[in-house]
Length: 337
Image (cartoon, rainbow, N blue to C red):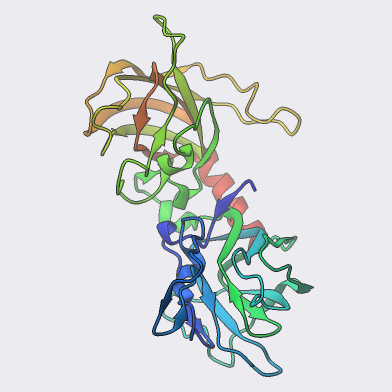
């Protein structure tokens, strides 16, 4: 599913309330990893599950859990993942959204909730993907179950909508997923997905980054590449390439090119030129975070070329939105309000 998981814990999401969590902790809902279940493993709560599971006999109102999104935005799809819950999955659910301050009580009776996914049947031990067509920005989601039961993960796919006031007169990490950055394409993600490159936190291990397979067609210009888009055009001032935890398999050299274009509906980013030199081909060190001063105006996306292959943990681009970028940011904000 394309789009950012707005609820993910690595983005700052939090499960702030639940009606019950007798068998499985509510925080598991937004764990970034895939659910892992080992049958026959027990603790004092019963069989150990990798997900949120409530006690039996919830009553006519069912159970519920509330998630504060890590980044507020427009929700395009919700995946209620019941994998590993076969005989104990909920019978159905619906999903609601709200706009709240981070310090508000989301379980208060006067909170105004908007239905994003109408009541639907849930398949056991399966992904349950539901499209959402509401164009507004939301900060919180409430998953309401039609019964008791277990859900392994809740993924909330959508677009980050940034407050233009927070970008005024400051330098912003425009590549970050929490500011609307997106990994649009990578040449290879054999060992780990390139989306980790724009995570807002520091890398935690060698699996928390982008690592490609070993190239066997090595020539003077052999390279892998990744494409990172920004929410709006920006004037770039600083670039960070972090190879943290990549000791024996780090990318030896990188070059970075920028684009001032935007994709069309038919071809996406495939035909957008990356013809603005941002960083010339430069040698970098293993397990090291290196900063570069750059000067590139009106950049909408970056193409990072890794020579010839290997691992990069994070790519961070810092800059200020252009005048046109500010106007676009305001337009996106107003359209989602």
